[in-house]
Image 1 (cartoon, rainbow, N blue to C red):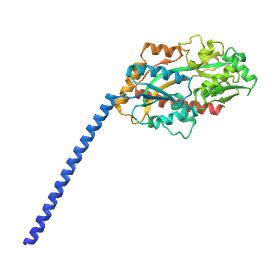
Image 2 (image 1 turned 60 degrees about the horizontal axis):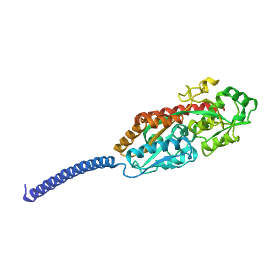
Image 3 (image 1 turned 180 degrees about the vertical axis):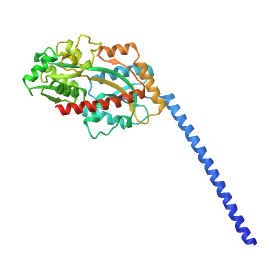
Length: 348
């Protein structure tokens, strides 16, 4: 081989060696960078959990003040404040059957300092009523725990005269279109309760929508609205005072807290069953250690005897679940209410 050719081959070999060496070094640098990033992420998440919470926590309630969600949020917030030493700020964002507050919560920073005190209406009913929701429960939120459940209470203005569900149905059938029922909006359980009552009994009653169930309840007391499927905590005090008459609970079985109150199903509308539930969620992206810490605190708080007693005095049962169980429950409830609403729509 001529010297010139030799030098060309030799130089080519050296360039190839240098290229291979550079590639190896680059791979090594990348691997180290990935390892450091992973370690930093782990440290960051661990540190976040260790110092969390270091400032007040906002708990969004997407319904009007004075309702059941308000009362439950305040009771729970006080227990968490006592445990963690950080203030729980209840932030009311009512409107559009809970949609407004839910969207605000969805867009909040995923740092564990904004929580959603949600219920069945937002996550199991709204998806079937509204075709274009900005939020998706399991895509945009991390379910933390189921926290409470309770049936609705069918209440009427005492001047209506009915002493039972059977008598109420007879009155409504005798005057089609003259009786009405109130609700806090289309996505609320009060709305679904009334729609199911119509489809189950065959009565013609008119829906009157309000910006909150408390407002609807006020008009039932005033005699402006005839009936309401109400959360028990806001209705029970008025039934005890004689301002409202309770006819039945909406659960499949009688409530342990109102054992003498019949169910709607046993009052002549077999198969009628509705139970409201509440749960805590956080925006998607909250670090897993913070999720675990929040879940543990919710389980602890809802096992406290005095919290259980306060809930029970409102007609609500305190409960808890794992995040996975709550996610599965939301999915199952959404599927169930899709069928319920579709059936009610066909029969109305």
